[in-house]
Amino acid sequence: MAGHLRSPRSRQVYIQRGVRVLSMRAQKQHNSSSN
Image 1 (cartoon, rainbow, N blue to C red):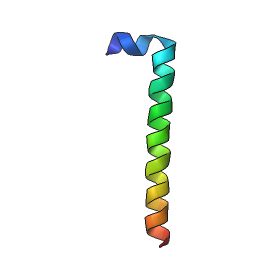
Image 2: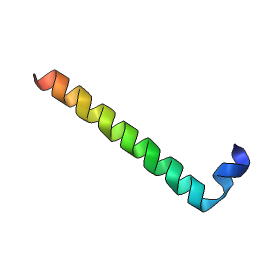
Image 3: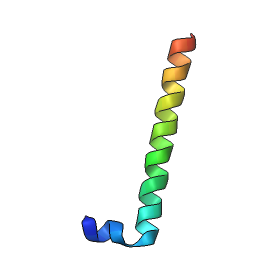
């Protein structure tokens, strides 16, 4: 796994995936708290 993260391409994909999950999670929390 460490070797995979070493390549910039897979690291970008990993970061994008994490950001997307975090943003989705934040939106869900925001929606549930505002309702």
